[in-house]
Length: 199
Length: 199
Image (cartoon, rainbow over all chains, first blue to last red; front, side):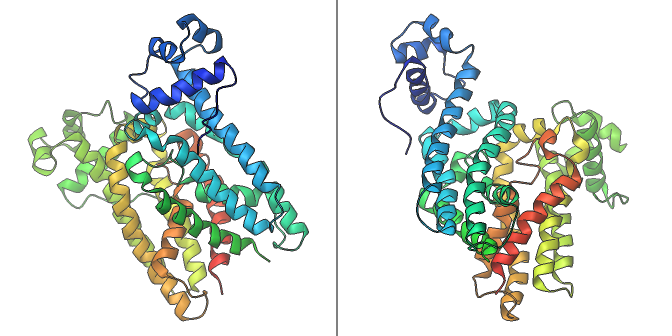
């Protein structure tokens, strides 16, 4: 579930309001004026933190990924066998993104197609940051003999690429389908992949 | 490589010209007038076969997938072990699409974002048709004992979904990268998946 705790500062409050407006109005109709009203600050205060609507939307997505990475790190550091942790992490990377945008019903397609080029550039960075967390778990699994010898970072990229097609970015809101359906599709891919890594 | 043989009829000739114009001008700038000139027929003849520019572009993509399916079927019917055939088929499903659109350099993003909604609907159909070809090979591999018992159609969906993120649809032309790079990424995913199916 997206973090619904109180915003810790103005920047956070702006991004929380962005999330609500994206859900309610969509990206195209969202204005800086409206955003300022939603936060309860002046328009000038928004521009102290962001230069454009585009930057705000992209920062909102950055924040989703930052929170996801914290959750992945938490699972990665847990006591379960490496295979089990990877399985949970693969579910988390898809379902956390799903939960973060599934209330956008109407407007996700519009947001994604308008920011497509910028998002593609960012995805590269997101994935390499995620891959490092997965690689740590794989390296541990190889060391303990749970996994067959493999290059941890290459294997991490395989896991990410093999589940990337289920991220909201690749699917329209209609295609996203129900959460249990997405969950079972990720679990199916994760099982085959993790069996494929196992020694 | 895309099929560069002579068109077998007017419909095929129109789609061949579409391919050239998409590469040269992009979807937005392509007009029915220009298309008719490129084929060497009257504009009215185009409308005997297609109702709109959108339908032409979508039919062009349909044709790519039809040709791909014929090639997959050919590999599926070959004599190699099931695992090897699946590996080749996974490479083919990604690289055939890559080869079919890689000469669009500039305009792929534009085409994909303009036809996004229609393409998403079609993708469902494409994938279920592809899945049936993969499922046949998996069923054979289970029967021969090469693969562990599994639901062939579910396993086929896993293979397709796990490689979907490398199809041109999900990647911009810049992100597509070089053919050898894509090939090695698909091969990496295919190896782990097929090891995961093996008994």
